[in-house]
Image 1 (tube, rainbow, N blue to C red):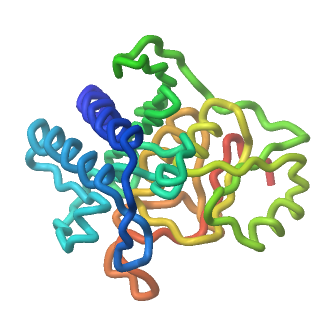
Image 2 (image 1 turned 90 degrees about the vertical axis):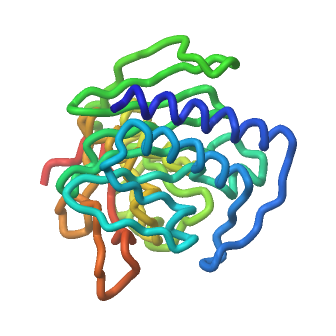
Image 3 (image 1 turned 135 degrees about the vertical axis):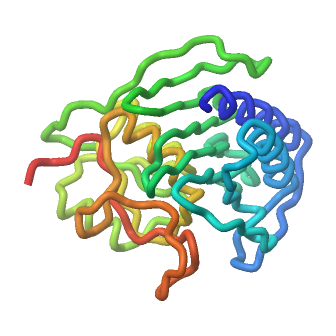
Length: 260
């Protein structure tokens, strides 16, 4: 499955970079989030790969959902965010990513995050995570195993560049975080997974396709993502009385959580 993810993400990333270099304008969806032709083309490519190789597994993809295409999900399904960090993309910051995840029984079992403008990708599955260096021809040049780093007294946090909040600042103060870096997209999960930071608190709204691939990689590298009651973040959340289908609650992602 990860081979399909890799092929799909690299091809989608190439299409995104073609638009990135040429330039484009963004439209607004019903929720006021931006969308570009790069989002749409990348999703078309990814769906073609997934439908061809795994025709019986439903796919929940961001732009399809926005268009009203929402297949029923069972115990296993795919989550796709073809271009996470569209604001970064439009503003010509390189932190945007391609995201594909496989969910089994509510758990993110496998995922890929590809940052095409940065030439890096991350894969995770079954307790094994890798960082891939991608060449200008969109071929893999190097694969390196990654793991979260050991817990330490001085900890580095990651926060959303576009969706920070006062509650995040309070969390950082309560946890005595010594440094905080702001970065866009699902790369925050990947930086935790490769041991570059320790915690990512998120107290503003996300959707499952925003987090699933990065979360899969983080868990495969030895980290975790938990809700504010300490339980693992789950996927496939439908018929929610308090929010839309596939919306996440607030959560905290840890590279190596502190002992309570």
